Length: 377
Length: 230
Image (tube, rainbow over all chains, first blue to last red; front, side, top):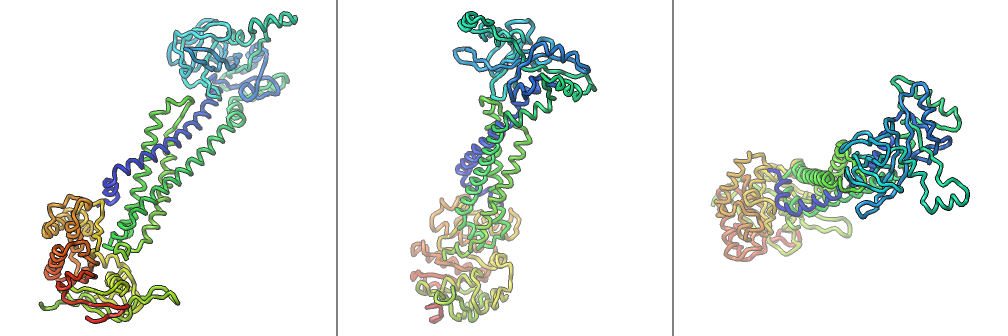
């Protein structure tokens, strides 16, 4: 006779409600884990997307993500001519705000050279950019659809394709445009500002620069040699992809990552305390019944089984409800929530350990109960 | 009625709680024997030591000194001689409580069967025995009901069935009729006597219920931890 299940069935509504409450708590824990992963994934996605081996940036900077970097566009020709370089492309990054469908859309505009590295990795809907001007490929999170038009700078662009999971470290969705268009947006001044510049005798446009030049190496080529060579040029710096990723994690998202990590640790501690409290309270409410069981001859293992099984069923149900809820709602989060099976399994392990530890408190109290309590003496 | 085996032997049993100025002597050198088929009552005012004596016979309290033998086996002689006291209780002692103490999450049938389950009976046999006892006590029709849905009399009969399930030879009852009217109290006592005779068991009852005094073979009076008379 399984006393744990009988007891659960007896107070099913209350138990289910408790499991649901715990499940909501687990949803928050899993959401935080997902947000933490998403933050890292978003940060790395923008670096990984161009599949570059080397990033050539302005000397003395850790650009283009950790610091602003500005280099002449023709740097690409110099890099492309280096031994071992299979392809090189100039790239720009700028955050823009546009109006679309009555709302302000904040996008991360990536300008790249058609046919060169730096463009969208995989088009999930529509097509890639085929003309030199006024076409863009947008991340699905922008809410744009192929065929939509949107004004960037002083020109209107047509959305021709969609990509997924292309965002910057701030979570702004990316749009890809040609380098020519990106430079135009970057350099064209507002008419009033242009008039002021002209009146001052200055150029009515800003100087065109790119953020970086990315290079893909031929198979077997020495990446270190290219990096060392570029660094010798003094006016430029070079970073490998691994260095760029490390830089992003250490300097760009580190604080946010630690913040979420610490919050996650606090949340897990709170969850542990809540689980312990629920199980302990459940046991305390049954002390008289436990005393009766002891009096009629129930061995300790029966009493331990009653408490531990209920604790594990509670923890398991809470975990399953939490997982189901987060998988249902994760797409509705404004930023990426990325949950790996490994994360869910680790949380299951933590909950299992917490439930065992928490039931230990209950078991300790239960084993101390005097059977005479049942007699009312 | 011829008296049977000696089932309870309490010899010079004393029990005190606390030490020094807070010491309370609950029992002082009490001797008591109960034979199979006997139905006896422990009487006395509050604090006279009757519940303490019941708990000592039920192997719940260890005496401070003295000797206790149950069903021919010495279980306490200055110290417990059995380590598995719960198993001893399961095999030899049945408890009937004032407040019946049925487990609220089990049905009437399961409340009886749980004792047999703990004793290692196969589930089907345990259920059959539980059903048999409930039918015998005329509450078989309430077998699927949870305790909350039973009347006071029905719950008490289910509790009696539980106490008898594993065929114990010593039945200890703490105010078993306190919650019942005089008619039902008389019926319960008649039933206990019948079972004691049929199962060759003895019944030791703590009671204040004067309505049922005439149903006992012996009335044991306790006062200040001593036997007043028997």
